[in-house]
Length: 357
Ligand SMILES: NC(=O)C1=CN([C@@H]2O[C@H](COP(=O)(O)OP(=O)(O)OC[C@H]3O[C@@H](n4cnc5c(N)ncnc54)[C@H](O)[C@@H]3O)[C@@H](O)[C@H]2O)C=CC1
Ligand SMILES: O=C(O)C(=O)[C@H](O)COP(=O)(O)O
Image 1 (cartoon, rainbow, N blue to C red):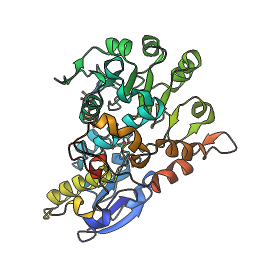
Image 2 (tube, rainbow, N blue to C red):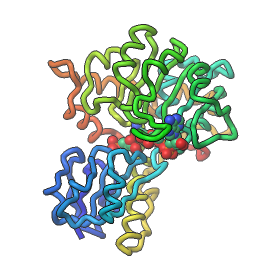
Image 3 (spheres, protein in one colour):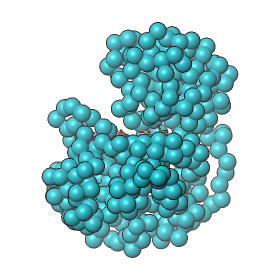
C-alpha cells in the first residue's frame, strides 16, 4: 500500500507508518505524476484535489485532515468512485481560541466588558458554536446568524441585524460559490456599509469570503480594525493590505497540536474503515502533559488576560508574517508556506488544566 501525504499533517508516521509506505510532499506541489503508484492521498487545505489530479492513479481514498473541503472537487471524485473524507470540527477549538486571543490582544479592556460588548458570529457550526461558548464565559453578549442553525444559548439574528449591532464580527462560514447562501464575497461594499465603523472584523474562515478591494476601501474610510488569518489571494499578500491590518497571520488559526492531530486521527479512522484495517490508535497518547495554569475555581474572565502571553502570542505570528515582505512589497508563497511548515503548534487551553474548554 502506498500513501502520498502532505508533509504538514501531524503524527502521520504514528498513525500510518505500519499501514503503508508513506511518501511526503509539499501539499501545494502535489502533481498527478506523484500519484501514479499511490492507493491513497492524504492532504490538508492547499492541495487542489480534482479528478484530473487523480487521473491514471490507483488512488481510491482521499483524506483531508481539515474542516474545510473547498479545495476538493467532491462531486467529481464521487463520480469517479473515489472515497473522500475530511475532519469536521477537528480544530474548531483552536480557531475559537485564536479569535478570543485576537480580540483580547487588540482590545484588552474587553475582558470584563459585560454586556456592552457584542460579538457577532457569522456561521454557527463547529467553530462558531465553540466560539460562542468561550465568549459567553467571558461575559460578552453573543449574537449569531446562520441560515441552518439556531443556538439556544445566544441571540439568533438576521445577517443584517448582526451587521448593525456587533462591536466585533467573526466569520465562520465555509467558502461556497453557489446556492441561496453562497459565501463568496459575503463581506462586500454593501455589508461593510451596514457595520459600525469601529466594529472589529476577524476572518479566519476562507479569504474569498471577504472582498479584499471592498475591505481596503472600507478601512480607508473607517479605519476599522481588521484581523485576517486567511486572504483572498492566499498565499500571496500585498504590503498595501498588510499595512492596513491590525493583525495578520498565515492561515494558522486552527494550528493547535490537538487540532492537527485530531484531524489526522479522523482521516486514519476513515482510512482503516475503507481498507478494512483495525483502527486502535489515539492521538492523546502522543501529547505531553502541560503545566497547570488555570485555576478551575476562578472564572475564566479573571485569568485569561495575564495568561495569554504564555498560551498564545498572536503578535509573534503577525510579526513573522510581516517580516516576509520581499523587495517587491509582497509576502510570497515561499515565506507563507515556510511559516506554516515550521509553525510551533499551540496547545489548546484545556491542556493547561481546564478540561471544560
Ligand atoms: N483558518 C483556519 O485555520 C481554519 C478555517 N476553517 C474554515 O472555517 C469554516 C467553518 O468551520 P466550521 O464551523 O467547522 O464549519 P461547519 O460546517 O461546522 O459550520 C459552518 C456553518 O456556516 C453556516 N453557513 C453557511 N453559509 C452561511 C451564510 N451565508 N451565512 C451564515 N452562516 C452560513 C452553515 O450553515 C454552518 O452551520 C470551514 O469551512 C473552513 O473553511 C476551519 C478550520 C480552521
Ligand atoms: O481545517 C481547515 O479547514 C483549515 O483551514 C486548516 O486548519 C488549514 O490547515 P492547512 O491546510 O493550511 O494546513
